[in-house]
Image (tube, rainbow, N blue to C red; front, side, top):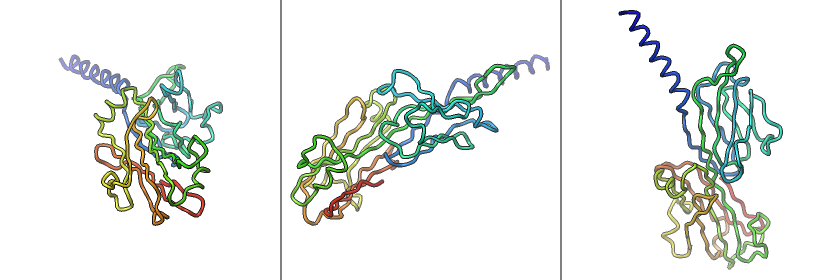
Length: 257
């Protein structure tokens, strides 16, 4: 009887181990463009640097999965090679995040068993969502937003700030935003929603790449010099990241995080 119980216990342990390896840990990370981000890898092994694989996929930008790190070594042919680094706990660091870094990242741990590579533990599934703000003075002769066009900002001119959330969750953006309670909001320095002020025109939309686009348009006043507007991203009513735009009439306006 004791032998049967031991066998049952062994079977449960094996089944639990198999299920752990199948069911990954899912994480959503929200970051603003220009910042540095750290993506965590669960179930890290001792000396995990030599056993770690990080891959990336984006259903809008790539047809398949892109290898970033294999066996702890960075792939040199990736466009973000210089901005990547692997930490001692196997987390992946990305410096100076751009809106093109959004997507789905997977961390896996591999060990060698009898001469064959075998995956150890569960995957770490990380969805990276990137918040980005572009500026478009209507007086600019250029049709695209750029930092150089900001030099034309001055009182009496109209300016449009576009706050965009780049996401790829594998689901409909609208469904994901509703189910996860994701929201973008333009506020002033005091944190007051700018939709309550009639001088600002605020509208929301989305497209294939950006789950939420919230634009703010206003005509600049003399007293707007050094005024700050902030785009805030909340997830389930918790502030995750934000970008602030400060009006400067001296020549160059800045977008800060």
